[in-house]
Structure formats: structure tokens, C-alpha cells
Amino acid sequence: MIVEYIRYQVVPEQREALVAAYQQAAAQLDAAPECLRYELSECEEEAGNFILRIEWESTQAHLQGFRPGPHFAAFFAAVRGFYASIQEMRHYRPTAVSRAS
Figure 1 (cartoon, rainbow, N blue to C red):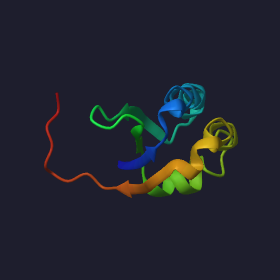
Figure 2 (cartoon, rainbow, N blue to C red):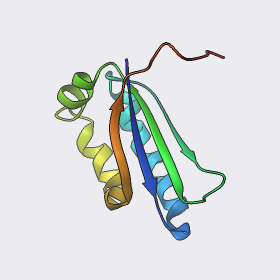
Figure 3 (spheres, rainbow, N blue to C red):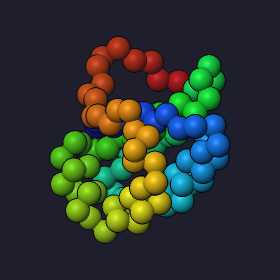
Figure 4 (cartoon, rainbow, N blue to C red):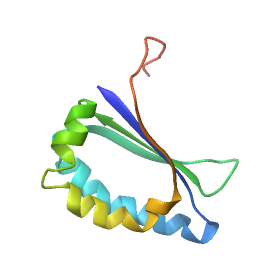
């Protein structure tokens, strides 16, 4: 499992639109077998700063499975308007330091 983090910074007027775009795009993540989990969170201290956390089977499953697959086009169409607001988009490998709930 690999975790992709996408950090966004949007102006306050775009906050609701970003959430709505990901509500629409979530259907494509739900349908993609490569996607295990996802969560969009907004920073409490700095409104307009968001992190999208997506757990993928692997980086390869994301880049070579999801991206050329049948769900990416609709996913990207839903969130394309926020592409310029991305501050970071990277894959991270979890370490042994964690706590399950």
C-alpha cells in the first residue's frame, strides 16, 4: 500500500467548490479497484488549505492502472479546475511508526 498526498491551497471563495468537486470525483475512486481509501481534509488553522489522502495498492497501480484506466478521465474532469492550486502531489510509503484506531 502506498499513500498519495495532494495538498491544495484555494481562496476562501473556492472552498465549497473544491469539496463539491471531490464529492463528484469520489464516485470514480470508489469504482477504481486500485484505490483502497481516500479522505479530503481541510486545515482548521488556515482555511482553504486542504489535503487529499488516497491509499493506492501501489504507485504502479495508481500510475499504470488508474491513470490510463476507465475512471481517470471522469475523475480528472471533476477536479481539473483546481489543478493550479496544487502545492504538492507525491506518493509516500508508510513506515512502522503508526497507530491503528
